[in-house]
Image (cartoon, rainbow, N blue to C red):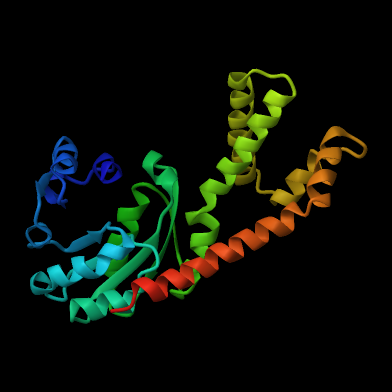
Length: 255
């Protein structure tokens, strides 16, 4: 919501619904109207963003059903809930865009993959893209099943980098650095490496080779990672994340 307002969406055009009074107070501080009623929130709305937990989606859509007219665009941010389940609960042929953002969206640096069902119009597609582009980069996928891979790569992805950062900070401390220094070095290195990877135009593999001098310190470190099958373990981790996404779709999409 903060991203939308920062990109020029008038606060008067946004209504936020939440059952929690504190959350409504936080959102009202942004200048938008708030309500405890989901049905009241979507009255007259062209776009409805369903930002709820996956396990709550069925109850939320069933509650909205009398207020839906089939003309609204429904944007679902709930992982694992298939668009056909949302359509079934709505009782209508309705335009649905499923999206998988990640947590850097909180800082306007997210990446979000979107999938549109067959009922989404070109204008609704543009509206969905501009909505999610307010908090970062947007890409479209043509198959809904691709969102399982997206979940594994980018949805859960920040946690993998944080995991690596944890280990590097711990190693720095073990090697004699104080924690503040180890943390600064690790985070700034991660930020710089990401900047190089996005702006250099070179593949990550080439960037790695560029900093790996024969017989040097980096080569020694990479050899240990390879000996411990870190690449294989990471690929398997993402495979398991994708599999879990499939399982959640079955679980949360059932009646």
